[in-house]
Structure formats: structure tokens, C-alpha cells
Length: 181
Image (cartoon, rainbow, N blue to C red):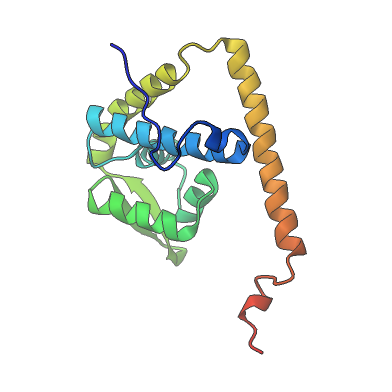
């Protein structure tokens, strides 16, 4: 079976991204997310995306190890903002994959627990993600995969440094942005 790769119509040629490495990485990340979402929707259930499936797996693993999981843990695991995590968790709760349980020691905290429905989908999600990873690596040698990991980790590190330095050197710090004239 031969698949045709479609190019974004807003970009007249591959030259659009050739000059900007960050643009290529960003485009690749979006395509990975869409492909994983499509795979999980087709193989498991349309109620789950790739991120929701991976998150459910992490919650189930923590629950199985008797570790408590909270929203702040999800924010740290996936490096996403509180508002995004809130939306993801609300959707997963509405769809019946997780529940949020109050914690005795702090009423503000809600422990995340997989429901029986979430647990039932877990093996299918894991198998789908494993197949996705395998298919994603087709045509790459173990050496190329190892080199790609090194390069991507260095780019990630550089991006984190840029963000930190930019925030520190910004003439308008987050604290000062709320000041009035």
C-alpha cells in the first residue's frame, strides 16, 4: 500500500521550513500528535486522544503502585499549563475514564483515579501506542534512533535555556506586567 504525503497548501514548497529548524520541529510535533490521535481513535475509541491515552496509562501505573496522582503531577509530566491540564482532565472525567477524589489532608487537592472503564481501555491504548512507536521508527537504524535522541534532547535543553534567559532578561517581568502607570 502506497501512501501519498500531502503538503500544507499554505506552504508552496518544502523550502518554507528548510531555513528554520524550529519550524520543521514544530510541524513534525503537530503531525505526530495528529497521527497518534488518529491511530488511537481508530484502534481504541474516538473518546481518547494520544495525550489522553498516555495520561490514562500514567494514572493507572501510579494507581497500581499505590501512588497518589494530582493535577500538578500531570502538569509536570507533560510540561503543559494548568488550564490545558484542567481541560484534559475534565474531558476524561466527563467521558468516564477517571474520577477526582477529595483528599482528607487538603480539601483543595483532588486525587486522580482511573475508573473501571479507563482500566478496561488501558491494554488496548498501550498496544496502539506501541504499534505507533514501531511504525514511526520504520526505516531507521538503532544508531540513527540513538543519534536522534541525543540531538532532540540537546535542542530541548537549548529551548529551555532560551526560555529561562528570556524571562530573566525581559524588561517586563511577569510581576511588573500587572503594574499600572
